Length: 171
Image 1 (cartoon, rainbow, N blue to C red):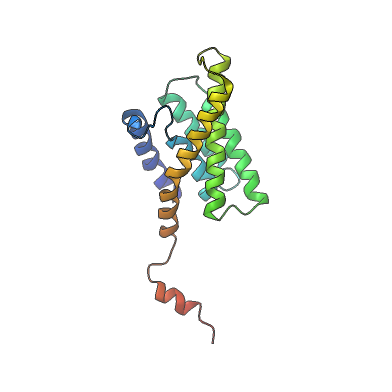
Image 2 (tube, helix red, strand yellow):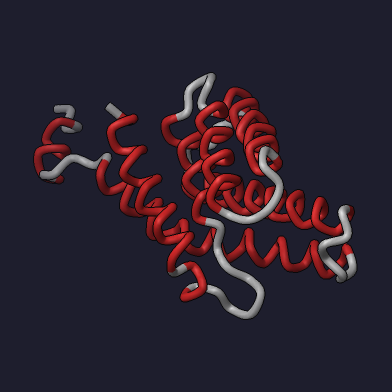
């Protein structure tokens, strides 16, 4: 059932990333919405093999955006695997921890892509500036994730709060 929602969300995000992502850009920093979808999938619906979906989303990003084919897939596979392992050891169910995971994951993803472009000679700025820009991308993506997490949390709530209070009543 969750797969039915993933494909339209990926389609909308991919269309937005390719057509009007510059609308959200502030200077050189903008949110990475495909990485957000991949990390949210691993956090909320992943299961033990959810990182494979994150890798598929990374491959979609590699196909849509300029850069090396397979680099985004490899980075999101590693980040998704790390989050899957953390979910097994820690409780990442609280939205604050999920926002921290989104920030860290997108920061590492953006820094990995930037580091590759620096190592191949495509980026002519210092590593410190690339790290700062990557942290900004992670922070901006986490800020975009706040309303998304709120909506996901509201979808999981019962429609009638009085009925929920009656079910919790113990005489």
